Image 1: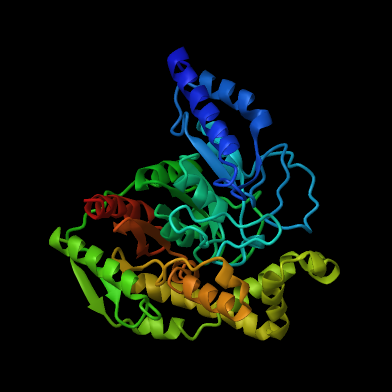
Image 2: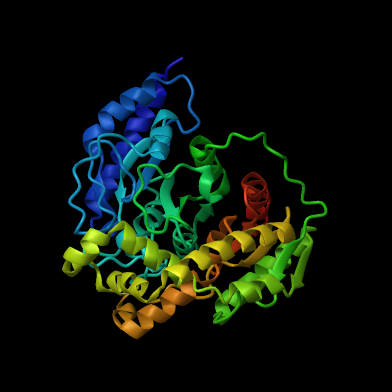
Length: 427
């Protein structure tokens, strides 16, 4: 039967409290949202009240400003997209709404999702709630902060090279990147058609799983994960370059806890990662982003963030044959990687550094350096079309992201194992 008056009143109070927090603490919430969907709250609440069941019933969902939400503009963190309000929801957002999720607002992001730092000169950069005056990570910056500040239960973002897992690691929450084609990208702006995935962040794995269950297209029968016989591989030749001492200490501490709970962690040198390290990953986004927004690139350059524009510029240095070979090599390496990894998982730090101060990122050389470092580990799962989960591990109230990477379509098992690891790391 429909929601009881008591449940309905509780949800209304939840929304009222959220709106009051945003109104009363403007500095804390500055630049987190580009707009709220408040003119549709009453309609959304009435729909939720009419539902008998719904996996997300009564949960508050924030949405990255890359997704179409009916009656609202999709800006992609940009100034050059003069879009009309969307006439329908993106496919995955429609599923969220249907399952009883209440859409809160569009969250801020790096322009076109083209950076791992979360900086936006047009709409401001959200402050990191755990590291004052530091970057929140990106590109799904506002989404991560909306979870960290407890105004959303789940946030829907994208992940092209780490854009849900990086901000999750930097703000002490959970970030999940599913296998690319498991969630429809219809109604979502594109950065890289080759690497874009829809991703989620929340305070825990279970909420990420619920959001994923609602949005995923492939309704396969679940295979219960069994950690017996599984290997958790720590690559000796990838994932630890430029690692800061505090991050290394946290990772080793987390690894030891996992070992003590009976999981088989092995350190191996992986030859396929030597091949991967030679791939010019930047070519995917440079070529595909410039092609997607070519009119703006040629006619409205002055409106594009210079840090984004120079990345789009790099497409001009890529020959057509290079790009075609890049696509073919990726197909081959995905098959090889899946054949090697099977149902096992890679275990690495999500990011090897703590979030730097926002002010330091004004320096162009520093921006480029930390952006590259930030994206280094997370991009692997996008290239290999795998699934990946970043779990928070706290030491002295400071989080480090612990990342598990799985093979293509091993998402359900990843979430099962991730839930087990979450329990271990929280004790």
